Image (cartoon, rainbow, N blue to C red):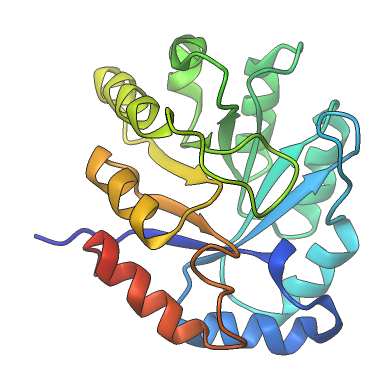
Length: 224
């Protein structure tokens, strides 16, 4: 039986000069949500999307908005993201902060709380926080830039993460982000990954042909 995968379109990869048209095309193509990478130039060596882009997108679409915070201090951003109409937020488990109250704050603000995990971080780091999260984002490249090759150990790590989540007894959606091509997506889906952040490796490969890319990806991973 095929299981529906959550396909998350990386807004970082769209033509920002045609943002409205791009969002409408992505929605028509059948993506499940829009994914926003917020980077501060400190946690990762890049600066990307900010609040104005999210604010502009919210009235354009009914799709859920998912935010991945790659920042050194996510605490002050949570109320702003809630006010902008964001649906889910993840921040990095590697941060030297107390994650529990921040996860609680995200949920209390009406958003789904999640954690992100870098390629070099052991999945066991997440164990004690599993009761507090709705989703986990496994980085399959070192975060900061699009167009990288997948870290080879990502497939084994995805399996380890799915087993850890399974032992929790909770319904936690595991996602992957970084060089999610058709082939890599299929291997990650076999491990149990259900959410895929799609960028230049699978979605933005032909100019505006998003529907074809989505159909090809769903076929590759065996998703409805």
